[in-house]
Image (cartoon, protein in one colour):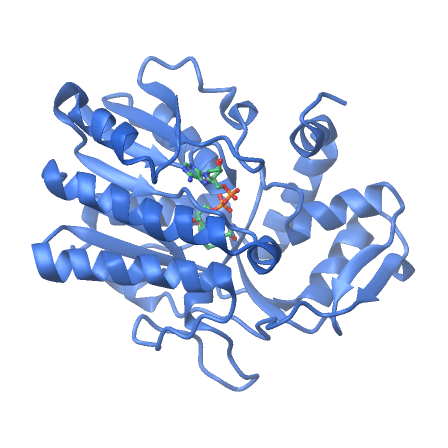
Length: 329
Ligand SMILES: NC(=O)c1ccc[n+]([C@@H]2O[C@H](COP(=O)([O-])OP(=O)(O)OC[C@H]3O[C@@H](n4cnc5c(N)ncnc54)[C@H](O)[C@@H]3O)[C@@H](O)[C@H]2O)c1
């Protein structure tokens, strides 16, 4: 049986990835290493947690002894997909250190173990934020765009990307990096823009929008991201970087307006608040490399995907209360 180590599989994107993989690939054993931080919840995996080909291990990716012990079991892993990260920019501004520990040291710990055990594929899930910010007329980021991270979060992710590159160049390790734009979809921790704004609106609380609300993000449905990662896992070229993006640029103000409309709430719930320091103005990603070389294309149209996502959060308010407070509503 093939064995794949997925890290951070109790978080937003990791649980959506495992939900697809555990069901569609029963011949693979999926081992999920997750620290179960505030953002990682076994509840996110409830519908597949009992599958014979799935196992959750609670632990930190920067814990070298634990990681080594996992790789030493049952002949090690055929592949690693590293989703585990501290992922919230605001938290990285308030406390950068854990971002370095998890995102940089954790990635290096996994790379080291994968190298020592001859793992034949290592996919590092990164972000478009490593490229920094675009001006209004700039073309979207390509894989050749310079790394110019502006927040401690994006700097830690860029550092991990560079370690991946170095492990490929120095040791010939089969490492592949993916850089994705903003994801939306079910199971996103409700501190992030879309689920947080839905929750505020449902409770008739002001929806806090940074600055003038004109920051632009390129949105991609989480399932389309996961399909891209799976494709890269199967067919990606070692040493390559693949951008994954939806080509759906919207201002935060537009997204907020759509959410309020969909929930039948008035636009005057919008409350402009002091901007985030170093707030990137615009992200847009050119994913033509992945489209051209591996044939990836997103399936979810943005308007319909966002409508379904809003509906999911409406239907799963108990889930949101559980993950926000640690107790069922
Ligand atoms: N959410 C997005 O829009 C987006 C976009 C592009 C890239 N990414 C990247 O995708 C990955 C997943 O993002 P997400 O939104 O699912 O994040 P998330 O915060 O929802 O989940 C992170 C998961 O990692 C786990 N984790 C945190 N620290 C850990 C540690 N030290 N050891 C083991 N597990 C740990 C958490 O418990 C959680 O389950 C991240 O690497 C992120 O940088 C996210």
